[in-house]
Length: 40
Image (cartoon, rainbow, N blue to C red):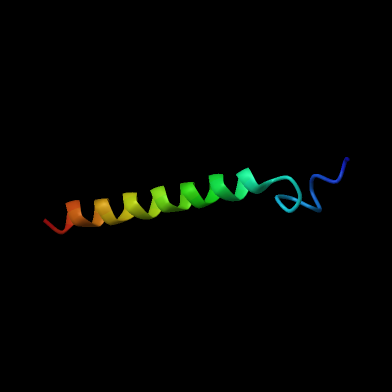
């Protein structure tokens, strides 16, 4: 159980994908909001 580097997020790490997906969505929303603020 010491292969954290090789099988990163593959087995028993479904929450990691959820976390990164959520982070990506938040980042995209933040960028869109910033563009809207700038283009006013």
